[in-house]
Amino acid sequence: MQLAKVIGTVVATQKYEGLEGIKFLMVQPLTKQQEPEGKPVVAADATFQAGPEELVFIVGSREAAQAMPIPFVPVDHAIVGIVDDVHLS
Image 1 (cartoon, rainbow, N blue to C red):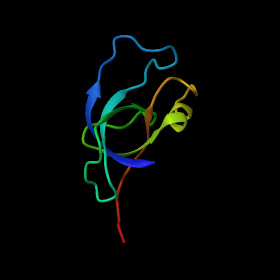
Image 2: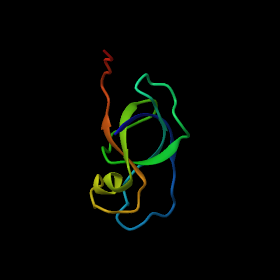
Image 3: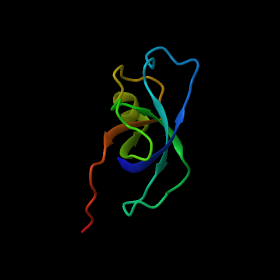
Image 4: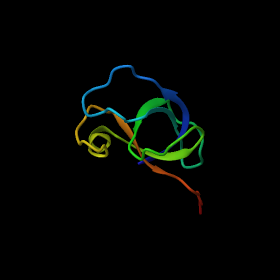
């Protein structure tokens, strides 16, 4: 899992069967210190609740496909949680 910040939305006029009703969001992966890390990616919102500027957890690869309501749909990244608070020690 990796921290990320929602920075935008993606609109798809056609989707793969099994992805209907799933929101796609642009997210910027972050370090533990919440600094940008790498390039933004498109992530499917498995929580159905993430929105603009929210801090979220994302997963990639096989874990992303398994996080969806219909497992193993073709997604590379998925939002699996919304972060309430971060404490570094």
